[in-house]
Image (cartoon, rainbow, N blue to C red):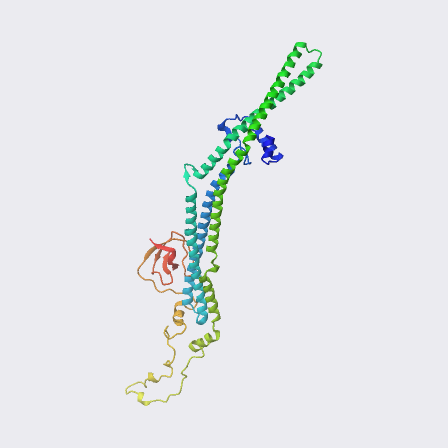
Length: 446
């Protein structure tokens, strides 16, 4: 047995550890059905291949785990994109209706454009992760593993292949263990009888008949010891002769498992490479263009020009018809009147025809005067009056209002919609007696 382990390139420490484990199975009867009772971490020992077979099941579980990883990251991408979309709509509307003006207003708007385009990029990432990647994993799993009752066919095939390769060697090995046990028992008995004979020979009370019987026992035990020793050696030689074939057949089965695992690892490398190409949005031209547009808007800001325009439209640059002395015109006096009436055509305080009129067509800052009326004195947006049509909608997600005029709600809350969704995606409604704005993408009609 030691010779076998030396041939197998095992150290003496491994041999003694193995021998100790075998001693723990003294009750093993050597039948073919009980071969699976002996288990070790060493691949070459009986049932030592179990970890290799288990690796096949682990590969399937790891594929499911990778798919879950991709799906969870896809959900994160979707939530991030949705948050950016809402943020972009909200602040685009706020900037349009707010008091900001001129080139600084355009620079501020470029931030919302960038957020919207970035959201589109991350929605594409989500689609690739939840679509292409997970479908590829599913296809690979279905192509490489088939279910058979409670086991994967590949697991069952590997188990059967190792059992078939190991069974002949295991039978001989168990015979070696049995003959070794018989030899050690015979040798121990022989040594005990020899010690008993030695004591009896020195004991003057021992009769000649008892001494003769004891010598016969020693002789028979010696013969039995020699016989079991030879049988033990013969069976060990038989095992020795099959070691190389056993190792070759087990290697063939092991390489099949290695090929299956190699295929899994190579596929996982492809998945991780695809994952990196999806989530690395820094190379997306849309993102680069968005950042360049922001920088362009900042570079194009003309502070002095904006201030000059504001001065001309709202400040000291405006034209003014200063009051002038106007001589009394007696033609304006009417008979029976109470002292005359003012000629409105000559009113020195009447607004000059050259003065800029209110309205978006005359305001170069996109209806700044109209924004003032909508936002009020405290710059708080005042929504238009509600319509008479009311629709009930249900919240699909939780939402926390970022402004005082926005509603906060939980998934499942029912809101009474007062207005249709505007061009920026916002609606007005009532929840629990409170009226406010909310994002239309967060609800659906009941």
